[in-house]
Length: 294
Ligand code: 0GY
Image (cartoon, rainbow, N blue to C red; front, side, top):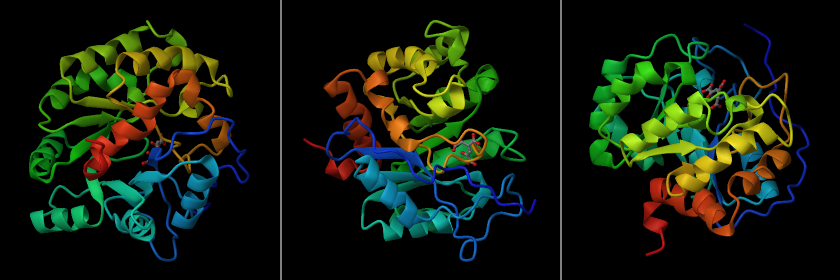
């Protein structure tokens, strides 16, 4: 694997939708720069550099105030690039790490000091070689005292098999991209209904109402995604998060315009109150609880 891929739009449009003050892009990544932060030997894709400066410029262009930077699989369990981006953010970014199961408590505390507030468990076979559930449960128990949560990434076909694993996690859970439902089934289709079953099973499971570009092949304005996802945001207004997914890992064949991705927001969060919860109140509760309004 030698060819580096670019997966992000070079000149995203300015969105028509203006996010509320303090809005958080709660799912984005940085890549490299490779000269400083080499990619993992196990990386399944080799991206071009997507630097913190590029991310923060996009944040400003789109009208956001903060970022949650999620460790991408191409950096494996070395969180240095994510930590570097958080350190450069002047307090406007926090992150989610991917950790080696052997990590000790001191290293976890160092991650906390560096702005990490959660650990990601990735079950996508095309992205990671193995996903040891027993080790993940041990990690989840160990991060409890730090007040962290876990972020879990899986595809809808895996949900039934993962159910007992998810049930055993003793901290809040955030599900990336709603567990990738087939949105063409609609809001009452089997994938969304199964996901609703999970949300009903406990009240500390959150989801990211993200990635119309990944989940809806119809393209902008992603009507199929809007129709399937908007009822979830309406019904679980205090447990949803939103993010750009910049730099859109692996999306080099259908690179989304981030301005258009932002313009999806009012179609899934259809009132100002829902937009305030999705973009400000909910992410602050998880990532900046000290800033929450009383
Ligand atoms: C995403 C989705 C993807 C990639 C990663 O860590 C990653 O490499 O998360 C994907 O390829 O679906 O959430 O950014």
